[in-house]
Image 1 (spheres, rainbow, N blue to C red):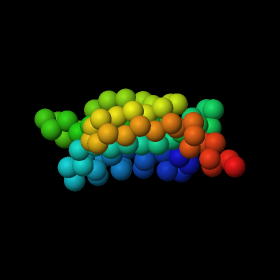
Image 2 (image 1 turned 90 degrees about the vertical axis):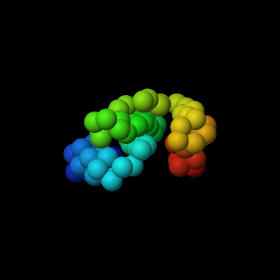
Image 3 (image 1 turned 135 degrees about the vertical axis):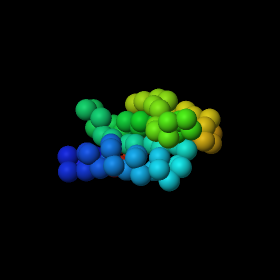
Image 4 (image 1 turned 45 degrees about the vertical axis):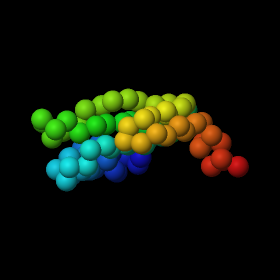
Length: 81
């Protein structure tokens, strides 16, 4: 995530998605170790805002909104070949 898009990606975009009723939202950022970090959120139907449900560094294994198992360190390795 570039510094220029920080406010948009962390503030504006999630608000717009919540207003549109998008139930699940993932934000991917580059961690200090250059590996991807995935922030996972779920829309709270009572407040219409996102609740954080997880932060994933090396591996992401989720069952909601669909089953997915990703080795995030492999994404980094493949991109550097």
